[in-house]
Image (cartoon, rainbow, N blue to C red; front, side, top):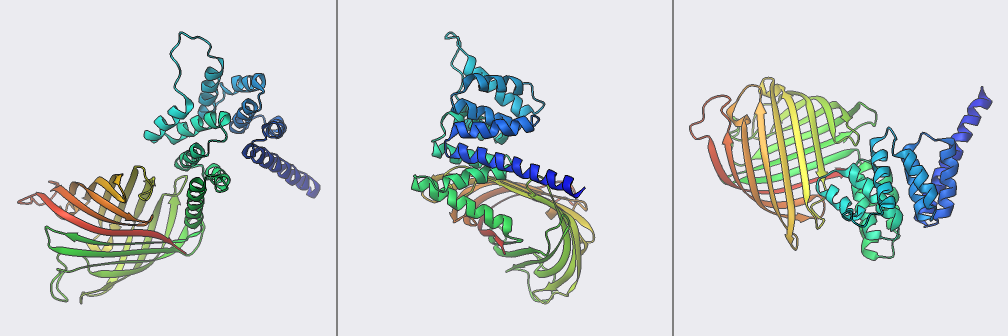
Length: 410
């Protein structure tokens, strides 16, 4: 039994080495060596269609056209839809001979078209087709690495970024090195910190909030400690109920279970103590729910950036009210460090309290400071939704100024 297990482990190790040899040779542009390693691996693992597709691209780069066509024809009927589609497109590009037919869209152009539509899996497929024929296009490979990140393939993205960090183009090398550092930091950091300072003209009030979460483990269901604090400038004398804000710091322990391929969301439950910051009483605080957030791009890059956030939670401090907040924003650079930003905010609750039921849209300017902090000036138009007590003037408009920052902590 021990000898059998040892043989299995040795076989797995050899297969891993074959894959490593293949990708190392591809990045070194040694296509014949890559093809040889790829052939050996595919012979042992004929069902690994995704890897075999990479071997077919290696055959194209090595000039083994007939071998690549044979592989692509076999893969064009694969049960893996992405592999089948990529193989069919590559076969079409290689075998199309009719001069009367309109020229096909190039894989490079198709890549950027797919990126604009946020179809990252399809973009990665087009990138592989293009890079098989243009392996020295480092600028494009960098874009392909971001596409792989969008598709959730961090391993492929990291492989390309590590290769590009040694690029002869200093700008590409610096960009790849920076992205690798961000990925390493995010993967290693067990905590997160967010704070905002938010002035609302219609209330003549400034709201301050701080949210800190730190995981105490790395299992599928992991314990955490948290601090959620909020404070505003117009809630009256100490001991009087807050007008616009809780004015409290909640220290809690809880459990959370991340979900999704890249764990952008999580379910959670926590319990702790709410401590009043303006003379309000302290009391126990229990809450549970789910949250999800994701960015497409980054504010500090010269390209569009999109962000989504959603949170549905039940709060004991509000007599068991379930409140959902949903936010989406999009920003684009217009010159220097200035960006135009627009978005929507939407809230609903189970007890139909009017101030928890609203929809608003905003537009304005944002100035990022690095990757984690930005100053924003927004014009806002909103409406309280008719789900509870009628509001005499449900429509509102205001000027909103925000300083926001969110970053990983170790």
